[in-house]
Image 1: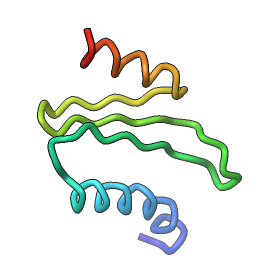
Image 2: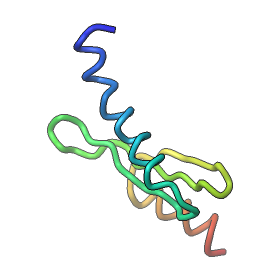
Image 3: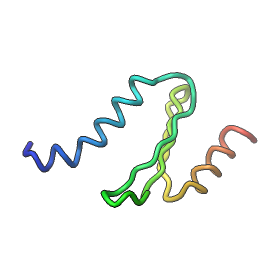
Image 4: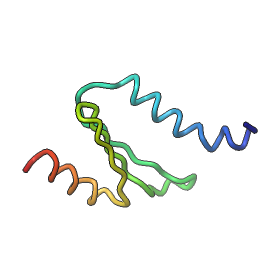
Length: 71
């Protein structure tokens, strides 16, 4: 793996590490941003069920959470 590929994969590795360290039964939500700081993807992961999802907007993610957990 060259240095450029490592730098591209580092944020994903870091996110998985943070999730692992902070793992609990709570729903985990995070966003991915480009190098300009613009959010392009929202993620949700439920460690109790193993369900995960990726969304194009915060609103889509909130709707999914509402349907899964509050109805």
